[in-house]
Length: 483
Image (cartoon, rainbow, N blue to C red; front, side, top):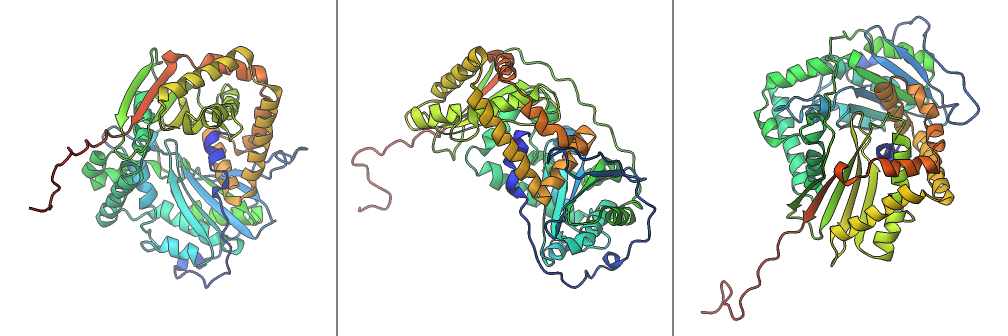
């Protein structure tokens, strides 16, 4: 399972609640008409629990892809809508638009007032949110199962008729700018997370610029450009609707057709990933973080995209190096030698050119160079000698656990199915993903360690603490002192 999904495994908490009086929006109260029998594609269940994961797929006449995964064990349901637009789709000078729409989509539509989306869901015992990445934007709700129709109505209404007014735009532009200040400009080490991408990806704009956007781009964006962005990307044929939980598939597909099929499809641009020039020499830089109390560093190596078969052994390598307190680098750098206070190792799991990321916070009295020497030695040792049978077994055991727990939550299951449908063209591929990881051998990991970790393929960013304030001269009078 991709490391990014592993980190998000337990984010899909369920919120149960009693049903409340129906929405004041009349459209929600409509009863869907009878629909012809669904003609979804299915795969017969196989012997393993993951292979038996129920998945029903269909495509509406307007191009909306639908994935259903019924599970009657808990009386809740999750609805996730993924739009195939992220910051990689933005144009230079128009960064931050994908993330801006994560906010704009809660500002009202034809039958839902500004901010009413939150109230309707929360008053019925549900929860909701949205997120933006380089590769997609998503919106989701968890609801009691008898409120599934509310979730469908809300998502369809804003897909059809989002309210993009000058007032809403200006309000959310200021909100996004404040979010950038709080989440990056005023948080230790956060700005360096943006800087390492700029350095590693260089002039490859889809991934070198930040998802949250450049302040100057947001300040200079005209309303017409925002309206054009929605028109270009927020079409049903550029989206995936995924539903997981307590529902009956045929009746639910009929409701989906009722709410979504009347939304007109629109021509959307096909994302043509530009070629990325290979890195041929090490890139090294440093920056001062005014909020950092301890030095830190980033290391990024270029690796294949997350759908590439070569990605599986690289992810297992990341787990051996940095997954948990028993991992190699945590034991050597944090526990034994106390060079670092913390370390993180992961793949970034992009649909396009990916990176293998290492981040460490340096302990007092040590340097990032010390830590990187240990990291280099461990990777070289694995490239030479491989990993032990116990390390491989532990990684596979943790992968089994990640997959099982990742599919228990309705929301996490709906989100993963939507991503597989969007990124790989078939949600049913999720059934076979664990097998791909379990098929990784120690020799595969050894070869991966020897293939991608040359210095010429590496970008290093040292994060420095601000210089200490000079001490006051002995006997100097303080301001406001005695005359």
